[in-house]
Every structure is written in C-alpha cells, then in structure tokens.
Length: 75
Image 1 (cartoon, rainbow, N blue to C red):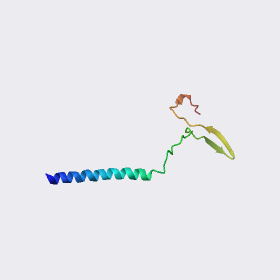
Image 2 (cartoon, rainbow, N blue to C red):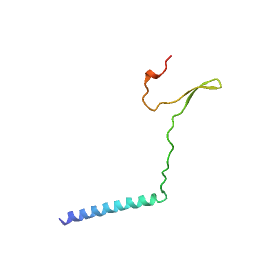
Image 3 (cartoon, one colour):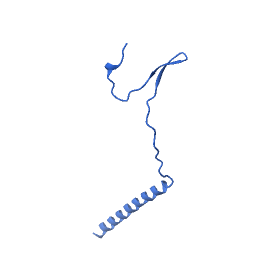
Image 4 (cartoon, rainbow, N blue to C red):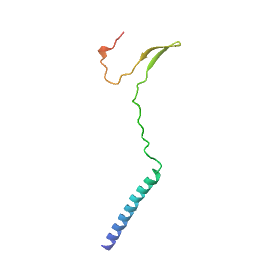
C-alpha cells in the first residue's frame, strides 16, 4: 500500500513539473511577441485580359457567387 502511494506521489509531482515547465517555456519564448495582429484589406478578384499584339482586350471579372447561365451571352 505504501509503495502505491509513493508511486502516485511521484507521478503527480512529475505531472506538476511538466505543466509548470510548459507554462514557463511558453512565457519565455513569447515574451517578445506582443499583439502582431493587423487588419487586412478586403480580398479582391483579379482581372484577366486577352493579349492581342501589344493591346489588352476584353477585361474579364471573376464571380463570387452562383451565376445564372441563361444571363450569359453565348456565341
């Protein structure tokens, strides 16, 4: 019985040392990092062009949602 209690105490001490070590390492490694979050601008879709010789033709915009195909012009 005494041996089981001794093993249990050792396990609890080692677990406490492990948790304290993780906490201290976290504080030590992150001490120079303050709040580095920054507001980003909204995402933009790129424009695509057809290159014909030296001219850029047919500026094409991307779609962000569902497109009704009956509204698109077909050849």
